[in-house]
View 1 (cartoon, one colour):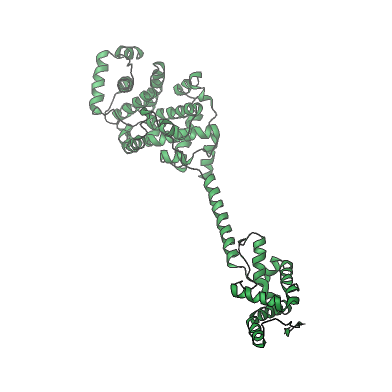
View 2 (spheres, rainbow, N blue to C red; view 1 turned 120 degrees about the horizontal axis):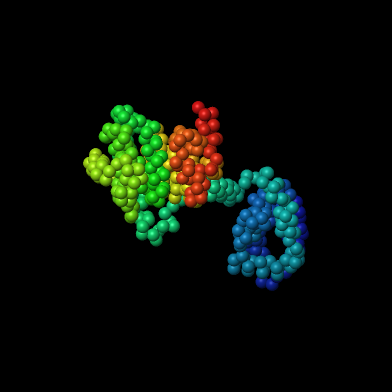
Length: 433
């Protein structure tokens, strides 16, 4: 019998097998015919065109490079069933030489697969779907990493009340609602910036002299900060509704200080002390009468949000240190003396004082997202007011109204008045305009 294909011919002489006749041989020959066709196909692929093996080559190369499942198998032979095993046993008995002959086709197959690099295969064949998906996944992962890195460097809004979670006096559960209410009500504490027009005997300069003197009195009595801010607020609100003669203006200031002490302080100065510091310009009866007049004019409305209320919250948002705190209060007390600053609401004054202090100490770019969130003001909204505050800082030690500068030029207030003003804010604003 001769088994042949287009390229090779191998002559094999059959041996006599007991129990096998001509019909049995034909039957066996017919049953092993599929194996002949499989060998013919493999030899044709190896001789004529190697591309028929490239898909299998890719799988093996991908498996070697970690892209394919290690358990995946390339099926190059007929599956071994019971019927096929019996046929192979009979074939070995009838053709022992063929059974012992090594199968070069399989060796050649694997040698060819190993010789073809993955890059050559990729040039001739499109990239498998599994590889395309892996490349897409890699790109998506890289994009996700880039987004995550952007999120890391992106500034976040801090929870400034975490440290006071166990402090019942901090009222962490209600503090945001409180300051939302203060923002709504601060308009009631403001006065018209042109109220001085209706005063026939006093002017803006006299008001500035009075407040500058009261700042020194407040410092001598060692009173609380909120007392000073409420005192100035009571003076402006009263003068906006009541005309006052020049010689009674100092009495208005003293009584406003007395009322603020009664509202804010634990230990209140007595009336005789106020008469004494006025160099006995007024009597006790005059003080009490002015007290009744101010309360009736203001309808006993003493609970108003001043700039001090916002200063404390905004400083916390700015993660302040002692130096920033003292400089911020120095700048905002300079604003108390100036009549022109009445056109700004207390929250804006507080935010601008802190922003200007940050710029003075650390340069520009200190206004964080946390500050913007809690104050409600962006950096651009603070520029105009900040330019005015820098001007006050530049002139704080000049002229006759130097009470604030002298107060903050002491060791108790960290010599905050000695800080160099932020001239670049004025220069930048002037250049922009």
